[in-house]
Length: 144
Image (cartoon, rainbow, N blue to C red; front, side):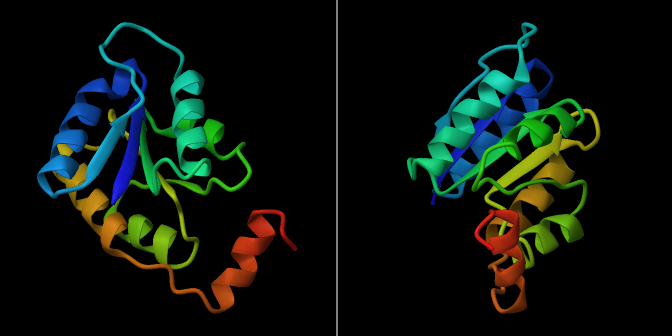
């Protein structure tokens, strides 16, 4: 799968680890920054990633900032993006199974890499269940 990753300065170190993990599993990864720990504005990087997902350049995306909140707020402003801030594997599973999330958001100051790795694995492996959930997704996306 082709994935987009992006972060702000607080998420840089975790993004680099997540990127290496995804690549080691055979996924294509497009890195939209940031590229160091110098202070930057998370909306700039969330925008780039969301545009890549919406433009079908990447199938899904992973955004990382300190709490995950800023990236989540920003990403969910884009019609067609369903960004899920996940703090554990249950949230990751439900975000995919019931909400068909296409962007995973992680908080680098909330979870460590082993937890992020588990969350990412579950998020990547869980399919969307469809059915009754599809009606709700259409409402989220403004189609109903």
